[in-house]
Length: 434
Image (cartoon, rainbow, N blue to C red; front, side, top):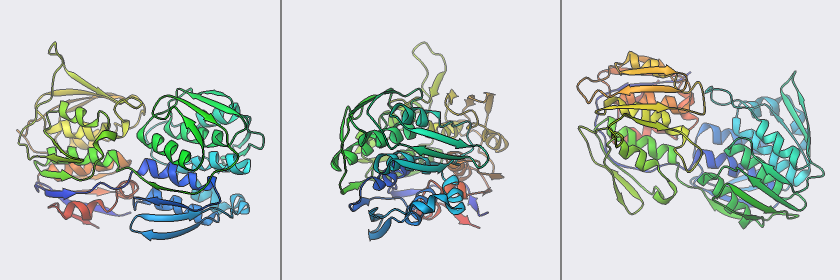
């Protein structure tokens, strides 16, 4: 296991470019299976989860060629179905949560699919019922082998249907949507996720020849087609990384310009950080955060304490709750953080408390942060990264702290953030990979 050694108290200054969106990449890469023609994808982030998925696609027989920095051409004209029976496939796919989205494309194009129960972050229960209930509505049948946690799905007779998503799941919506694109007849998906990444998938599929309407809403209508064609697609910048850099700038009193943010796609993310008192300027599609010694949390109109909570899009994304929490540590005022979706995502706050933060963990879903207003600095400690977003939150805390910190298990951070140590060191951080 690798670790980061961080010297805290360094003020950063300069420009940083966000990587391509991790959560979009996992959907888009699975969609290359849906055609035998070449698909070219740009702005692919060089991170562990995405690289593992691309390697898995190659193992399945899909050809991949690099056409530029972060750009690859894929062609799935020959897929090796014998590979799905191997222990290697079960092991590799199980280690990557995004692999479950291979099922929708396989059902659409080949009428069958196999997938192990995937892994990923340990942030609470993440059931897959929504995916399989949607497949069943379209006429698929599946078997689940509890002994080796393996799903086998028969989708040879997919037909359009009314599908109500019992959970507003981004991956569930993507999976059912991809299966429905080539089902016979029309499909309606209601209570669909509508995140920008899901919109990107819909736009890409439409360019490939799909007929999806309602893009950007929670009501998708799909007219089934018999085949899809090749296309070219450029991914959005990663909104979670953009939010992480906003929080980092505030905590470390740094002046940072985040380049090429596609601000129109960020929804309410900048507004939520502004509620913590963080100043920012929009310069075209760049976000400039000036160095701030103090930032004050807003209160409600009646003077009561602000609550920040996650919600399905266009609400505040749950992936930034950890970042908001750590950023509030040095604000003036108090805020209640309510993480509704995952019951284990706030358990990293004990590390922040050890560093000197004033946080009351009310229950698995709620934490009350009393801002220090820089009257006391956090102190460096040794800690372990439990998941991607908590890992970067701990990194932000360590960079703002007095002294040296060590973060173990940084493979979790590498899963979602491309060369984060090198990119931050380039603008003044002192992070050593050990």
